[in-house]
Image (cartoon, rainbow, N blue to C red; front, side, top):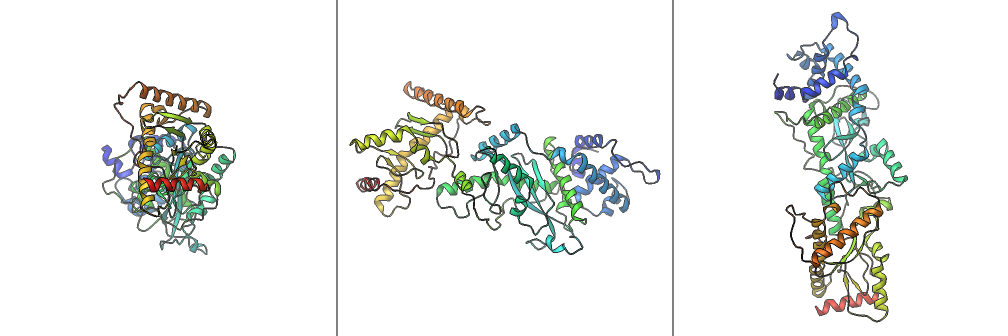
Length: 493
């Protein structure tokens, strides 16, 4: 059978088929002459069932297997048990530390969102429903009986966790709270692991390791966060589309006619085969592709209340604190602080703030550093108006943004020159050594400006923040002197 026809029929490559046969070689049920079916026919029948979702009798009547309905039933039961015992645990597993680093690097390179180790969502798999007094638990909000399967995938749409045990009436947030993934990530966080996140939609509760979108973004920073969050999390929607495109049994119009336990086994087997296809680069598409409606319509389930203050703070992510002049020459850099610290906190702890405060206290006037809304307004640190009230304040904001743009261009030029600080895999050093690397890059950057070394690299890095100024959450303006100074500047511009 030609390769493309083989993939169209069974949704896996010949290499995967042979690997499965080899794995199950001595694990099939004992041979009985009157009912004996060859292992390759059994496996082909099982894969054909997963690929099409057809009736057992229809699968059995196909030329590929030519087996009776009862034989197909036995084959499916046997194969599901083999997959459960020997395949699923091997092919659906927690990523290694190196794999997590690759995932974080890939997400950051594609979307600019740091620290992502996976994306989570739930998908409903229709089935007939149990014929007992718990049937109502499986009736979902979409109006049919289903299992709500929680899936976490990485940047390659590879499934790293699946939980297909829960009835369709259960909410995504409930399934997450009951999962081993939540327990593991909470333990990792409690032991001091930081700057790693799973992305989930508004149906999940915000946690220090589970980032959700803002339901009502208040400013450009939160809007930009939501946009990058959606761009990164879209991978799990595409994962569902690809999974259901390959294995039609989990989107069959009639649903799975099995018990909840067996339906869970089918979901697990499909996810394991999906991962094999990615690993073996089996990318041939079926001739009748399934269009996943969720790809362009992200899950907007009722938002869960955001109760964790630590998680709210983490979501307001920041970076290196840097001051530059009009030539993009760096006059101060502080790269000591963890990524979860806010810009305003880093500034308050800096020697620059102390020096400028001392200069002001000694009578020095009419000198300012420009910062975005993430900093506290001070007599020597001018920030934009959050809600300009008149033309003067609007004009001030416009000129402030025009002048402060130089620091965004400085970041772009710095990272364009020294790719180690934007490397796809990040710096693999201790925080102290990473700080030294940042300082060295900044010093070399200044040398290049002084010596007019302006040659651009052949593959320029585009800094996404150049045209999108940082407008992190405004810090309360407590200094009355600074408010008056800013107002005077606005009037006189």
